[in-house]
Picture 1 (cartoon, helix red, strand yellow):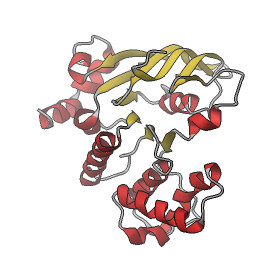
Picture 2 (tube, rainbow, N blue to C red; picture 1 turned 135 degrees about the horizontal axis):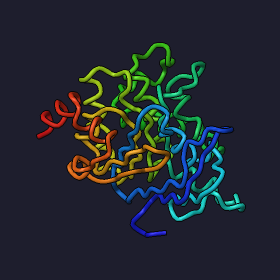
Picture 3 (cartoon, one colour; picture 1 turned 180 degrees about the vertical axis):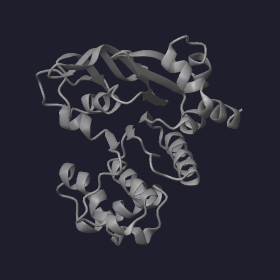
Length: 257
């Protein structure tokens, strides 16, 4: 594995029955970057993320994360790797019967069962504040939060174990433009202050322009292009051209020039 890469995927194949989602897919995520992952509906963006974090078993390929081959038959090191990343699923995926603080404490209880309740509470509040929520959000249940606050609560849980690597699946989906811009700014700030590497699935053109160092494009069952947006704009692939040079793409580009 290249020491400059946090994630390396080679020859990945994912299929559900007759439907092949990925075939010979390759992708690298460099240390310290925010990599945006885009693609049309059905191209398997979330399936790719789930494969990398071990929730989807590919039928072929290699996946190396933080120097470890995750598809190796020896699973003894999996827990150690899992505590080095955090995941924000679509919609936050919070446990509805737990308070925000209790949600943040779920991974802590899994990996550090001997932590005292006082220490768990202190860590939870610190992560809640880090995610941009007020301290009193700790005692609230997900149903009492707005959509944007639920996303931030999910982010607080993703940061619970002080990860090196952060996976974000459509973090700004459903947010108004102001809320989305604030979440983008928070993501960039966390990346810079905590030294994170971020794997970011999004369809939000403003997010891509505002915070992504590179963008990977999924189409035709593979990653067909990866690079800075100005490099992708030179591509002659029809989906890339339509996505980045269509009406919304032009507006987003003008807004970030």
